[in-house]
Image (cartoon, rainbow over the protein chains, first blue to last red):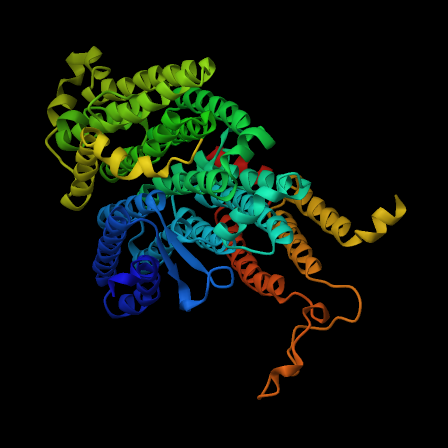
Length: 497
Length: 130
């Protein structure tokens, strides 16, 4: 039973998703419990899989017993073992969190929400676990389609934002499919390892170079690199809180994971450094993305929208870090994928709680929230410190590796941009904290007196509070144990650069 | 030059269709036209895959004629059969396309119910008015 870990990790949420409407037909409320139970088992299986990878190295699972180049193979190594745990842990937290917020925002669509939610998790896990190029495309589309549905049911304007996301996302996925087609035409195989073995002799072929360009361009759309990021802020701002808590941290991170897979597992590192100047392009794409994201975040008056632009800037960190192409920066980039998934999840939980309590998520709604919801706001401060990069939160350590890596690579522009965006995040978050403490209101103490007394202790419901606290604790724990994570998992993911 | 165009005509058609679809998706302001463009774009990729599986000469569909029973000694010359794998991949891709089309149309219906129009400019104007 436990040998089947890789397929169970994908199979459990998929089967649970199919059964969810039936359970909803019996009892509407049971869907919530059903989703929690299935994702909990999925989380346990993922943990077990990661554990056995750490113990015994890469796991290969042959679906249906077919030999690799012909059948589809699931491959779990240290990198996607870690991603499996990240995805399943965050989706478990998101589903616990979504109970109350779905009840409030989508009261009559609970059954379908959880069905699509589970399908979304299936897509994410499938992308992470598969060792087959075309299978990855299918899971990418499952994740995207479920994502469109989860976003479209949001507030006013969500359908239009979703429509734009569909158009952009389809172009991205199609580019990926063209890239896979070119690679198949040249090698006759779709299994990543098989292809990786054949490609080095074909690096001179223009078709292979074009394939690499198409694959990366497609993924750039999915991960929201700066010029093609336009779908992200609208879509994630207008999505229901529970959907954005699931999709915002994971979709971009998973695309980043696929990018690393393609650059360093499918192609040899020397391809992306010498044959095509991909790494150089990536550093500059990272620089532009960080600058664009940070500056646009400054201009926002909506908390969730601000988070979306911060998310875009964080994508730039990872892309730049991978582009620097040295061991230290690569470790930083992989650690940052983990950290940013947790940080973004934490911040979006706060946005959801504010939405739950005040009915919108503008920055001005934060007035007096520190007194009203001290626990939530404490979690918010931990998340904010992590984005800024203050030790001992985990954000500090990945930024440290990235900074160190850019010094080793002597890439000063990237270094300056990294530090600049940290400063911008200080401004961004202290602005929110200032509003939260209500300093802005205290100008009119005389007539504001009545308002101030009205602010009472009014904490978020427990179902939303627990995931928030867990994420905040995780931010600190990942920071404290970052050396363990690095030596047990991330050190093994570094390709021979 | 002319032979270059003729020999690779399937790829030229693929590129042409893709460009038409891409143009419609990016430039047209009507949401349904965008969806049509999206479908042309996706179909272009299907044509590309299918056309890569073609073999010139007396080639037939991949159905094994002599494979039944013990009489497997005939052997199968793969040069006589079109490559079946791209066809199978495209069956999956077509399913994905249909699903995307369904979601896109459903979202378009939602937009029409909320805003009463399918022109992007008018929708943006009506969003701003609220």
